[in-house]
Image 1 (cartoon, one colour):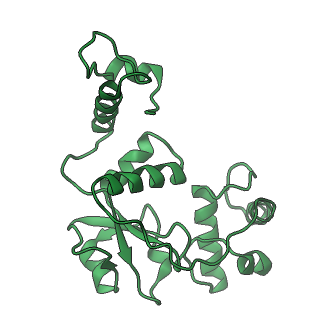
Image 2: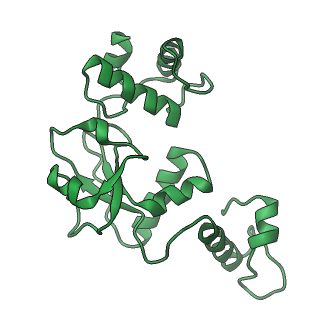
Image 3: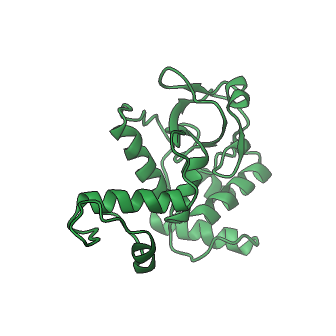
Length: 207
């Protein structure tokens, strides 16, 4: 189901089925066209990519990864990042590693960032963007062999440690949000660990 605030429905809702009403719950045409108009309002650029799965080398500067670290695709390719499919679209993109350097990897293009104007959750945005690639015919992603993540209580303990070091991790909730990811990456860099923003027990123990 498309999630939109009442004000957005009033301002940008589309009567896609022509029945004189905008109903996101009961009309797929209304929901799809209203969602498309909202994305366009936030800066979505038609015909451009948003997310492409890639393969990464075993060794690279992982500190360059992150949703806000855009650079020309050619630079990523020079570092050994290759498409899992046939080609990589040109332009600028950010390398995102949802489960660290040993898990799935994606290049996220500017349209991906537009989705954060709709919802601020990294997991929500990544899931929506990935399913959209599947609808376009992309194969299931390569899960890789990521290092085990932290349990909720371990994540809370990590957030407490990061907070004590002066990082803004938001609420101590055991959720790996954007603030926690940035703090994790910064501490990995300080400790000389692979700075892929994926919290592990090794990082927790080191803190």
